[in-house]
Length: 178
Image: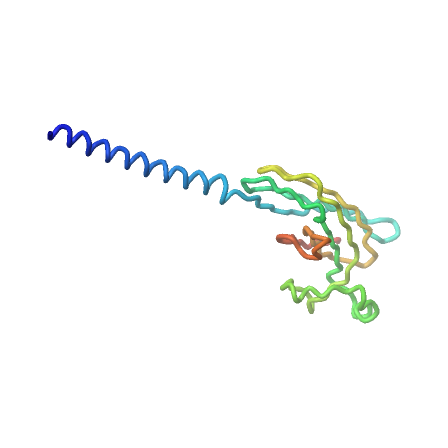
């Protein structure tokens, strides 16, 4: 009887351990491959500029998005990449003269001279290609910047036109033209 009882107890213990291991493995698999699988997009800007004979500046901007996440980022049909170029130091005359051309970013916690910049350029691109994990997509833009602009701020972000809202985070950088 003792051998049968010991054999039955060991089978029960083994079955409990195997069941527990299967449950833990299942939880780990679901959390690793289903729950915590998501894209993580990191944006960056690269700029080059050339002064033109008429005093204006040609700015070539490269916007890159890198997916550091574990899932593919697929863009919705209404999502676009927006790029804004702003003059960091508009004159007081320009501020008074062009109230309609000013952008007040102070509500978005973007610091700057009085929170107001003069918008110079604006561009958008349709996002149609998904970004797989550890891969990158890049877009290039050309902008003509007026004379006497010494520094620009660059903002790029994904925007949903249908919902009229920002999707995810935006990326900003400052570029000096001198």
